[in-house]
Amino acid sequence: MIGKSRYSLPMGDARSNLKNGAEKSGEEQVAKPHISTSDGRAIWRVVQEFEKSQWWSPSNLYTAQLRGLGQLLSHAQKTVPYYKTKLGGELALDAPLTAEQWTEIPQLRRAEISEAGVELYSDALPKSHGAISYIHTSGTTGQPIRVRRSGRTALFWSAFTLRDHLWHQRDFTQKLAALRHAGDGQDPYPQGTRSKTWGPSGKVFKTGPAVSLNINCSLEQQMEWLKREEPGYLLTHPTVVLALANHCIRTGETLPGLRQVQTLSEVLRDDVREACRAAWGVSMSDNYSSREVGYMALQCPNFDHYHVQAEGVFLEVLGDDGKSCQPGEIGRVVVTPLQNYSMPLLRYEIGDYAEVGGICPCGRGLPVLNRILGRDQNMLTLPNGERRWTLLSSDDIGRFLEIAPIRQYQFVQTSPGDIEARLACARGLSDEEEVRITNWLAEKFGFAFDVTFIYMPEIPRTAAGKFQDFISEVDVGGSHQGSDGDSRK
Image (spheres, one colour):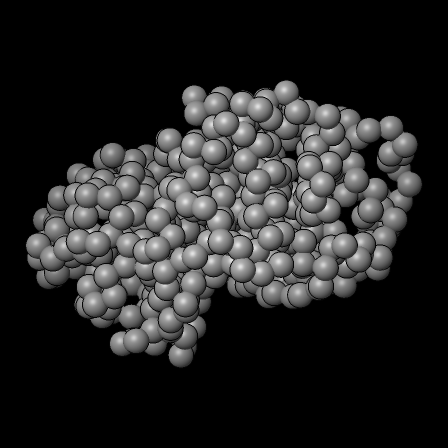
């Protein structure tokens, strides 16, 4: 076990880097804890163990994860009806789980979670895992699932949130502002919603207040609210950041107290980082999470790539042949939450694609993802059946935005040969500008699609507040279901 915390992930005897890790982590902490509750003490214990385990070598981390997977698998086989039927006694776990045995476990898709329902619940959850709670998540395709979580799961979620704050050396005395929730009546303008602390992190550190405003408020309302609140940190979606930053660049307005922007839920493109620096002179940090799984990866405090949160999830990136991708290769994300014994999700095919990274120069042994590419359903399908990423985040998007005064754009593939260009513009576009956009799309997508232009005052977000720059409505058969990307303060 890590230390003596009953909430810790089993880590075996892989302790070769603990001393070095403890020295490094001490340098990174930006404040002394002021623990106010028993929950705060539990969160802090886990975070202290994270400060050690992050410096373990990749091989030691992998060994520790296999041990944790073996324990979770044994629990699922014995106490979860779905896995009793699905796996039976096929895997003998008297000896430690091997990588080869793990790949024999069938992958789990969202539709199977929905169909299995309560059959995925454990009928013998260890008492030490705490109280049970439930969430509903609809996913990008609108297929809802009900997820059962334990107190242990919530504890690790809070600990990863705090790890992110510590990694990026945030000043807890500052105000944290969030532009996120999209439901009717949530965080309404002009006041939004106020909290005295930064959520669970306020149980460990003395923090400033947190304020929230509905993401569906107008750009002008968002800007007025931010200028009035004067936050030190802003948490929102990348497309909101881009709209706000471009507004400030155009008008000369500023957010002088802002220190950093945090993003979630959507793919973070390079042009958003650049706009953020140009408008406010601050950096950005991103995270990769979902409501049903929790945190999967946090941005490295030293680089723009992501570290998989190996203490909480076992994350696989698999190619079309089912084998693990190597650094630089893109594949499907298959993830197993290690702490949720209440509803084990073994090898959950979450619907995302990611690019594997190499060893990080920062010294952490946590696995690296260079980038998260999004959903399978958002891949372009050429008329010959070939599928490819649109890579709208690449550098040549700048040439597209120079064609006309486009505030928002969204491309929808409605059939193998047709693209719908949904645009929100400062003015109507000329025929010449439409032709230039059509030509740019042909060059970008590798095919001369028939393009239909639709002009809108504002391109709507999903019910979860997300925005997608490319959507495919082409039925290619067996496409993967997406999840709800979400995070907490």
